[in-house]
Amino acid sequence: MSSSSSSSLPSTKLPVKPIPGDYGPHFFGPIRDRLAYFYNEGRDKFFANRIQKYQSTVFKTNMPPGPPIASCSYVICLLDAISFSVLFDASKVEKRDVLDGTFLPSLAYTGGHRVCAYLDPSEPKHTSLKSFFLSTLAARHHKFIPFFQIDLSELFNELEAQISTKKEAYFNTLSDTMSFNYVFRLFCNKNPSETKIGSQGPKLVDKWLLFQLAPLGSLGLSPKILGYFEDILLRTFSFPFFLVKSDYKKLYDVFYEFGSSVLDEAQNEFGIERDEACHNLIFLAGFNAYGGMKVLFPGLIKWVALAGQTLHQRLADEIRAVIKAEGGVTLSALNKMVLAKSVVYEYLRIDPPVPFQYGKAKVDLVVESHDVAFEIKKGEMIFGYQPFATKDPKIFVNPEEFVADRFVGEEGEKLLKYVYWSNERETEDSTADNKACAGKNLVVLLCRVLLVELFLRYDTFQVEAGTFMFAPSVTFKSLTKASSST
Image (tube, rainbow, N blue to C red; front, top):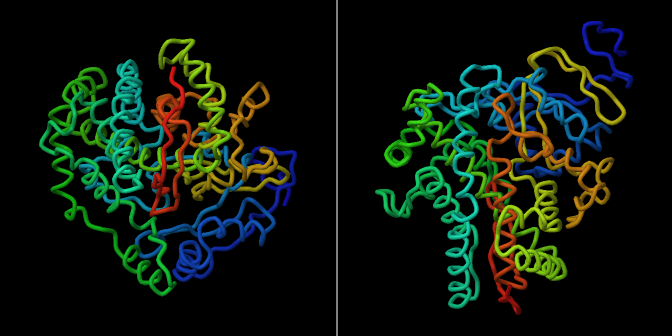
């Protein structure tokens, strides 16, 4: 098929070919692909095998959860850096109710509201809610670094204590506590331990997240027969909200009480009804921020640990020299740490914390990969698996390797436009008119501060790393205190 056969479609200089792949028989095709994805092949092999089979980085397939939870699991999969970028084009792709892909959790989990994450930028409420988020974060920018330094100090003290007594320390639990405390204090200006939820915040949010996202996950059970049993358990019915209703009410009450100044701004400056603003604040703080950090910080620690002692020495040297010259951990100092900055971008490239992105074609469109174009019809679901797009061998040299200084220098910085972790190119800002993560700059900043505080305090460290559900699992085995100080 050539582009001239569809005169209403945009023109392309590339040959236009039919999209390969198939969805299989109704009902059974989606289940076939689901079992392959979770149990028979595994996530990355599922995509790699189909690239090999079709000799294409664009193809048709089914994505979980499938029936009976999701009525339609059909997607057009984009797995290269060029085609993937269409997911950022709000004129071509609609982001209405596609945060979790081919299914939408019950709105009871969000107080009956379609929160900002479920809205397309064309919807009026998206503009007011996203503007509210951006304003809230901007007003707290002076707290970003000092609040995080306090929480990191407590984290490192606990890591040291556990390693001293138990010879190891499970990082994820400590990181989750730190992350929730940080997010709550940032938005509510209160330590959660001083509220009625006490230290239960992470557990309350974890349960709320799990019951929403369970159809998209797996425990990685073996043998396969246990996996198939798990599949029936997780993907036959959605978990009802009443199982976490009391937990969510506790979260709502503390955010409503201690986030009153934020809610005042939402109501008075942006015209958002207070109850709706509170549910959006919980989603921003619990799902977007804390939920993202559950993956973000263990992942960063894992990749830096695996990079080895040579990189640790280079980072320590750079960080300590800059801090000594600048007199402290400031934004100016962080911007002068070119290696630390590159390490963070390389982590976000090789192992993005949110690997999936979805959108529905708003119009008939042509999507180009490197050397071929494909026609996508209005209403078809488009799916991008980011770890493949950001490891595109036609863009990145040695894409499967963690190259710490990949983004150093002028040529390295040119590659940032292919780093997509935030639902947008790294070179683009988050605005009220796009779906880029409202806290994208904060995420990068916190990762850099984590590295700075880590290597001001320690020369090197060792971990054991694995995977559990949606996140890397990291256990510290040793921490070597800094041999010299700033």
